[in-house]
Image: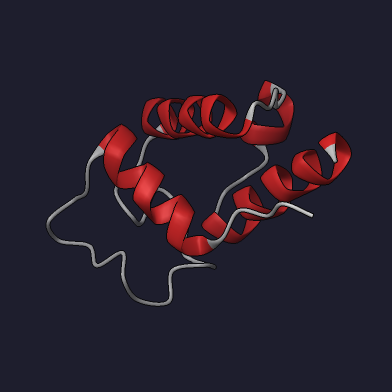
Length: 85
């Protein structure tokens, strides 16, 4: 089964939306809100679009809208990946 990891998510966040200099993405960020990490809804949209392209997925806006932390987004993406296997 394919699965996206936190390392992949961090890479895609950086590539799609950049990185706030005051935030360290290399630490334990799973339960930190995207807002606290310096990412707004547009940054999250761009990141999810990159995930969809890279993994040939389609994730609904409702599912993405419920993702407030990286852990939430990983669950959503990995659930979608499990459905495409």
